[in-house]
Image (cartoon, rainbow over all chains, first blue to last red; front, side):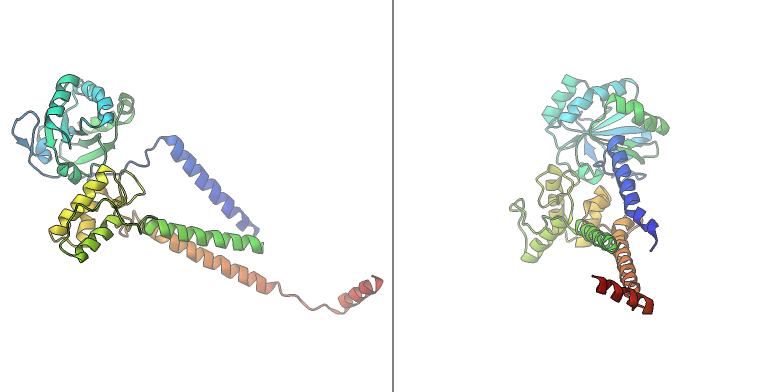
Length: 176
Length: 165
């Protein structure tokens, strides 16, 4: 029998080992799921706003240009950590829409006064039904929507200024 | 060599079995959830469908739990949506499709067959075929190794040696 066959298990083990090592070291978040909405428009729904400025439909917000839809709640510690980054981005001219997810209205309003409001407008999703249709499974989540209203990228979990500079900013700029 | 091939064969079978297991349902799937007491069902059949669906659906947050076993908020939301859709008369397939449209193929322990999911369906079969092939090689090589009868010269050598000892 061919002696070269002996090498197969060893080569397999080496290949698997280097693959796992690569994934561990690369910082890829293997728990981050790819959104099935990528390349598609956001679900349509009329949502009230925290600012009491009537209702908005997230699927038509792109008519005023590309935007980030940031899903947040006052109950979410990572949202608190992310908030200064959002303030900074809003200052730099990034258009951010908030989706206040499964939250208490009064608490959300207080949060925006105390921590500064980086959002153009905040949509209320108190029962989480809209978030469910978006496939939200852990706040904060940020949806990158281009000028055609199509989802380009979904960021699961908190992002830092460093992550913005390294990776997300180029996605945003490609949408402008 | 023989032992080695048997080892390869066994590990292939074990791997195929393990992939099949994790691909089909969670190890906790047989347990009854403690989180469904607050739902009321029209009949037992509907309750059973609810239980099967929530065991088949996988929690996107606490990965490798099904939504029946998980107490994560998102698992609770998925259970609620399953219950709503059941009451609205959706079929099991429609409910699973509803979840896949929002959370992707990841959300079910029985993902549909497609080019993205081909590996988890085909790999076990490929491993079983590989195992069968290597078993066949082992059997064939054993058949070849049958002992040949000694010729005259060898017989003489053997009896000389036996006498000497």
